[in-house]
Image 1 (cartoon, rainbow, N blue to C red):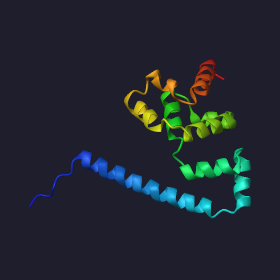
Image 2: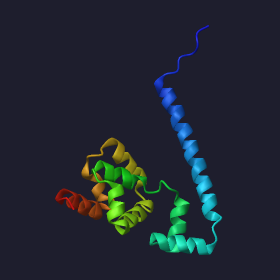
Image 3: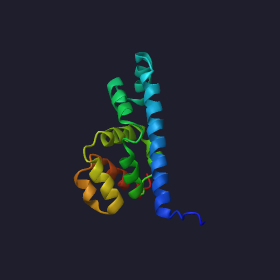
Image 4: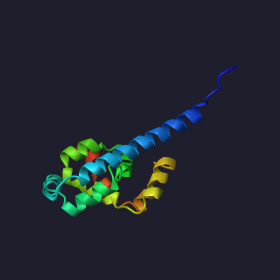
Length: 142
């Protein structure tokens, strides 16, 4: 008897589900670790990050991927998020905060996948002005 053939679509689907489950478990563990912190630890962490304790709690509740669209948009714009985070940590922190609270996440993700070069995102993205500034700085070599 021949072994059943597994096509690449079903293999990638299974891999995607496996990765999703791993991320969910990791997020759950991260939230549990954060929830185990006492208030003094949260105040210290928030201070180190330049956030208020309530902002840090809110970001922790949203999870580590809450600003993934920002990183994807920066990549589409050929902006290096790591470089921006090193050179301008407050700017990067503010952009992440805005992105994590955005109500247009589904629209943004769809636009990133379907039409990453279209400027339509500039009509709803809370980081439009900052990303434009960063692009102009990058073009000048700053």
